[in-house]
Image 1 (cartoon, rainbow, N blue to C red):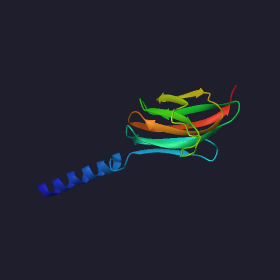
Image 2: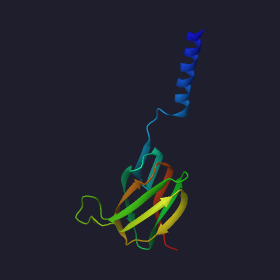
Image 3: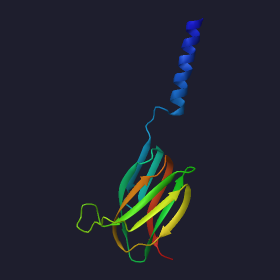
Image 4: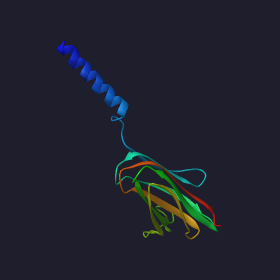
Length: 136
């Protein structure tokens, strides 16, 4: 009887482990899309996770950040003029924006190509989209 109870308990613990997804690795991904946008996808992404993307801002365009982050998930978005590795790449950010939770924010920068760094400032789950749209 004790062996059956121990086996049943071990089976229940294994099922709980599988159902809670505890075996899955945390995810924090940043990708540049063909439509001149950057997608951020996180599932328990650890604080300090980061990634790069690229964005082209045209004349009379603004940058729009749309986030669907859960609770107090916080990311920092830094835009640097130029493409990483090019002569025009700037060591100093043109813009630094912090986003917490869900919402939309927009701002303007000079037209050009930008390297965008996205960093998790806390453990973060959810998505974000960085894109451009006409001003106005």
